[in-house]
Amino acid sequence: MKLLSFKTAAGDSYGLVEGNGVVDLGQRLGSKYADLRALLEDGGQDDAAALSDAGADHSLDDITYLQVIPNARRIICIGLNYREHAEEMGLEFPKDPNLFSKWPDALVGHEQDVICPKASSNFDYEGELAFIIGKPGRHIAEDGAMAHVAGYAPFLDGSLRDFQGHSVIAGKNFQHSGSCGPWMTTADEVPNPMDLQLTTRLNGDVVQNESTEQLFYSVPNIIAYVSQFTPLHPGDVIATGTPSGVGAGRKPPLWMKPGDRIEVEISGLGCLANNVVAEDG
Figure 1 (cartoon, rainbow, N blue to C red):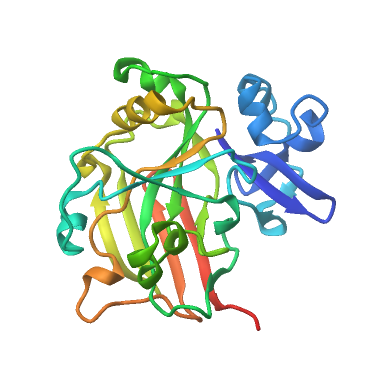
Figure 2: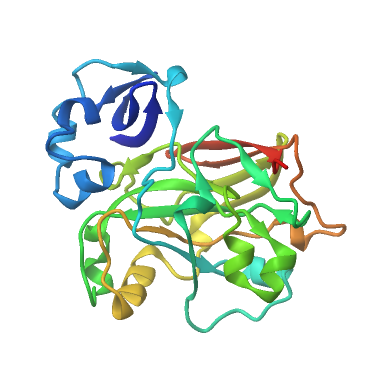
């Protein structure tokens, strides 16, 4: 299944992608599960799947995409998880997973504008594979970790490099600087998340192209590590890191600017696309 959060004139909802349309699960199951996070929390995936032949309520062209889990409790990101990316940035490869967090309002959905802020022009792209937790747990063993994954989605970790140099939290959390979507592909449709092709395009030009096979810390590694220090909850979003090819690693640097279009495509998961606009004011 492909599950997504979206908005129409009637308000925010969530649904199931069928062809070029959306089965509105919020309309059909909203009294039981208020949103997509609640559906995951209460194990409602079977109820969603039972409606897969119900017929589309909306065209994909008529919805406004939201980030996959708009009300995620936590968005955890892994830094420097591809060796070649660490090398291009001139940084030592970490001996343990290097974590930071994003705030929900740093992200938007598919085909929503990402904002190049007034405070910085060093606006970099990082295409990533994200996974969404579906089963809670603490101290999760690697050999059982995959049972805790609900699904996967493309992720754009927009990064303001000058701010990141003195504050990772600031550089990674400018409002509407990144995105996640278009939807979450459920784990049963992704046999091996470590064998996906990740491609990032800026204005149609390929700037990153790598297999997730090159991730140093795998999805089970990450789940086991993170769950040592904090419980994982359904709807938590974890981004696994970016491969080489980022703008900061190029000579001269390649920054996103207003008028650009950025796309993150992952085989089998879809293509996340956003236009870059200038901050108002």
